Image 1 (tube, rainbow, N blue to C red):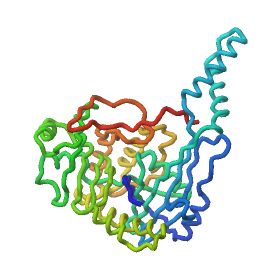
Image 2 (image 1 turned 90 degrees about the vertical axis):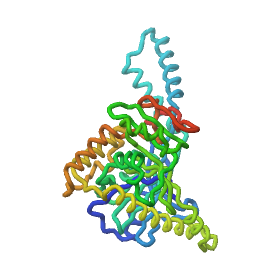
Image 3 (image 1 turned 30 degrees about the vertical axis):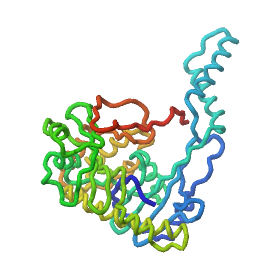
Image 4 (image 1 turned 60 degrees about the vertical axis):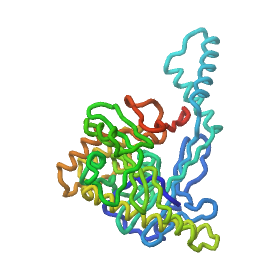
Length: 389
């Protein structure tokens, strides 16, 4: 139970719900097998897997829940081949060319017939709810996947107002400054060996991996006007991570001493005790890490209509707008934060943010020219082309 990614949200007007009531609400939206030709389904499952039927673990103000996303995978090539075969047969029999609308109707029929026989892909996504700090943290590969889990939680609770956790100083500016001005970095923050830099005004990006971020080559690029959109850092004695320009933590790896403490804890070979021990240690460490990172970036920015709109547009850009409701469905009311900070966040979301390389479901090429520094070039994890009804 160690998160590898932390996509963070601030809860506004948190629901006052006891653990028993929440567990009952989760039961009403428990995951069930896909039936018939249903293309996908999301529901809650036990964080401990088959060894338990507990949908909620709550310890010391930390709540752990797990969403299960099931989706039928139907390769587009299979659909295309079947459609072409049926269309050719009809055209030969009737001696005419089929209209576009007729072909679309045949395609819909093919998908409806093949879906029940399609493979089902299941993916679990863990959710940590810090009730003492009113924070939500989703261990998902992309913000779109995190928003789907929030949709499920909103449906479970009936109402949930959240906004992406934002900072007073833009991560882009802070990360760029840390590269060019070593003295500006907090004493506990150490640079890692990877970063992504982007030129202003275009989509060209430079990726450094297994590189010396304090070397002359990286520094000269920053001085030439490139900005850091992601950077690997280490919080000494706590964890290492890749900080993204939207204040998402990727490639989380907790300190060996913490892992060893968890491994040495007495659990009597009980899988539930092991899970809860790991979870509490991780949640406490991650909560402290978040507080440190917020402090390093000038504190938390208040939610305003501008930041809410920016997050809504950013989420919509990751996929089909119908799938990106997330926090945009119920945004928190305007806060009392500085409007200039909010506007700046909105501008960066629109112009300076880069798509992440490990976003789920991304298919296609680069957004612009890329260069690489170091031993390897950045790899893309792209899924096979599939058809989702």
